[in-house]
Image 1: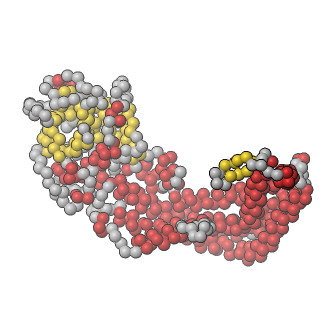
Image 2 (image 1 turned 60 degrees about the horizontal axis):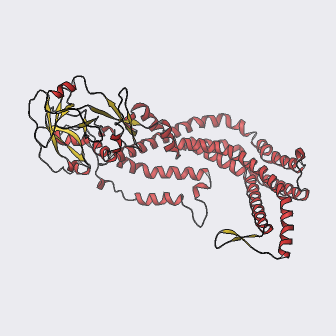
Length: 529
């Protein structure tokens, strides 16, 4: 008897591990029109889970789904009841009705292995040609199925394990996780990352403040994550919390070790490098910007600028740079001898702290270029806005504030004359404004590039997913990214053995496997892409 197409046949999820019997009552869950079997027992009566098992979802929904029989046992089918005939490996080869068999390996939740449906399931056919196998994906509630499969290990223990044989570590109930002071600590950490009165958050003002916020947040969250990683409940939540806990521990230890190594390098090479700090600062952040402004003011490569306006910008920004240099050089002279000791001392708390200090020092020394860019950015934005308004006046248009659109408007002759004059003047001045804006923008980009390297190194030390990368290499099953159905051919002789019975040979067989996260997904999730 031929089996039906996979979209019409009953779908049976069958475990390939954890079975101790080859016949008996099939116990599991009904998921819509499909069934998920977890074990075969001699006889089963519904029992309420104990206090520890009540926290595991799905154990109270277990029920008898049908009968499992050995192929050597000549027992007739029970009318109206699903009967599965197993081979020597305890896998169904035929049934009392048309079914599609989906084999799955029971995930060991004590080792934090589980299935994750991800965004979608995929089907691979191998060497089998079947145009209907893709329908099995659309007909199955994979999220519900995976939730049941993830608790199948605990269900097998509940059904067939003897008391005292479980090697699962001692877990905590959620009522044991409440710790006084945790909420207050979380509130304090969130305040450091909040903005007040329209001002930016404290942690965004400097890399060092951001470093302090990160370390404080880790200090607050690590104990709580340790307890939640040992709680009874959803294995996915436990695994993610466990990975976060040990990922934080790995990052902190790695940061401290690199900081200890950096301390020796700073003390050995730092004095020689910092001898040239003043000259480097004066050459690259004072003399070079002034020379570049003078170069732009001299009409380079035939660029014709407005002479009075260009002279004003050049003198103004040169004054800003010189005044800032005169203000910072005395402090830099006094700070330079003790800077290696400060960096070496900060490296005791990790290399990321030293990078944060260097990043703040770079931003502070380049503050005059940042302020110059902000001023020029405001001037350019104001100039562009004025040109847009005067262009609308020149065309007989006006911005409608209520309707948020440009409407026609009749101006009198005086308004048109004055607007035309202002538009002409602004149009001739705008290339000069745009040139100085572009020049200061390039200076700002150069400063951001240097600061970005330091901030990038700090972010890498604080967020690199070292522990998850190790898990991806060592035990990919603990980092599931999705599921995959691989269609396989029935075991040799299964069709003939199935036809010897009154049942229907199982010809549609799939293997459900977990696909691990890619290294790119792990890195993107850690960095926040």
